[in-house]
Image (cartoon, rainbow, N blue to C red):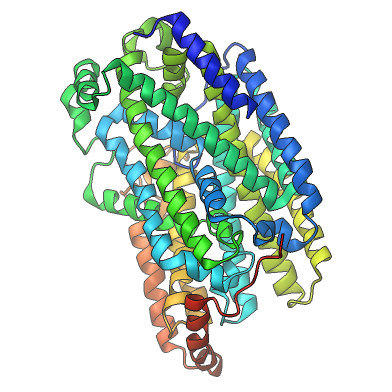
Length: 562
C-alpha cells in the first residue's frame, strides 16, 4: 500500500498543479445522507469557480452578436472543440455512475461505457460534416433546411426542450445529492449555487465561456481519473490481470463479476439500451450544437476524432477505477462502508465508489480535488444544456417561427438571455421538487427521446431524398410520444416512481428505444411516401442542392472572423 504521507504529498502536488492552471449517464445518486463539511473540497471548488468566472468576464467582452453567443463566432479549433465535447459528454454520472456500476456488477458495467462510445462513429461518418455545412446555430437549421420552417422548427425546438428538461432535472438532483455527500452543504443551497453559476456562465459568456468551462473541466477530470487509475495499477505492478484476479477474490459475487448478464437480463433490453446510448448521442441538442462552433467541416470532423479519443480513454479509466474500488474499499470496510458492514453497502450509496477510492489512494486533499471536479462536471454539462435550450427558443421559435426570419441579432440575443434566466429558475425549482425522487430513469428517457425523435428526423432529412415535412414531423411526434409513453409503462417509472405493485409494469424492457425509434423511422417513411402534395414535390426537388452543400460546404455559414 502507498504510505499515508506519500499519498498526501502526491495528492497535494497534483491538487496544486491542477488548481493553479467533471448526470449524463443514468446513474441515480439516491436520497443521500449529509456529510461533515469538507473545507478542502470547497476551497478547490472555489478556485475552479473563480477561474471560470474570470474566463466568463473575458468571454463577455467577445460576445457581441447572436453568432458569438450561440457558437463563439465559429472560432473554436477542432482540438479545442474535441476537448469541449468530451467535457460536455463526460458527466458526473459517467464518472461516478459507471465506476459505481462496475464496482457493483463488474464486467456488465461496460455496456454503458461502450454504448456511449460507439455512438461517436455514427456522428463522425454520418453527421459531423453535414451538420457544419448545413447548419448555423441549432440542429433544427439542418433538419429544416429544405422543409416548411414553422412545423419543422416547432417540432425540433419541442424535441430539444423536452430532452434538455429531463437531462437538466437529473443533473440538478444529482448536483444537490452529490454536494450533500461531498461538501456537507444543504441540498437546496447546492441546487441554487449550480443554477446561479450556470446562469452567469451562459448569460454573460455565451458559447465562448461555456466552451472554456467544458475544456477546463475535461482536463481536470482526465487528470484526476488518470491519477486514480495509475495509483490502482501501481498496487499491482501495472498488471490488470492481477487486479481482476484480486477483485474476483474479494467481491461478494466472485466469478460472476467477470461475466455478462447481471445488469440487463434479457437480449431485447440489451439491444434497446444499446440503441438508446448509441443513437441518442446523435440526437442530443447540446452535443449537436457544438459542431457549429468550428470554422469548417474539416475542423468538425477533427473535433469528433479528438472527442472520441478522450471519451474512449476516460471510459477505460472508469473500468479500472471500478475494479480498483472493489479491491481497495473492501480492505478497509470500517472507513468506507455503513457501520463497517460490507452487506450494508458504501457510505453515501453505490455511486460513491470513485469518491471513496480517491480518498484511499490520495488522502483528503485528493478527495477534495475529485469532489470539486465532480461538481465542476455538473456545472459544465448544465451550462451546455441551458445554452441549447435557450437557442431552441430564441433562434428556432422566436426568430424563425414567430418573426419568420426577420428578427435582428440584438433582439434574438435578448430573447436568448431572457430564456436562459427562465431555464435557470425552472431548473432550480424542478431540482428542489424532485429531491427525494429516483431520477435514474430521466437520463435514460432523455437518450430514448433523442434517439427516437431527434435522430430519425435529422437522419432522414439529411440522407433520404424522398423525405417530406409531413413525414418528418409525423415520425418525430410518434417517436417522442412512444418513447415517453413506454418509459412511463416500464418498471423504472410504473413501479419505482408511481409505486405500483412489483411485476405490474405493462412494458417489460429496460429501454423503449428499439420500439420507439423503429416506429419513428417507419412513420417518416410511410407518410413521406404517401405525401404527393405540391409542397412535397418541391422539397424532393431541393434535395440535390442540399446534398451538394452538405458534402462540399459550398455556401456554408462562415466563421465570424475572430
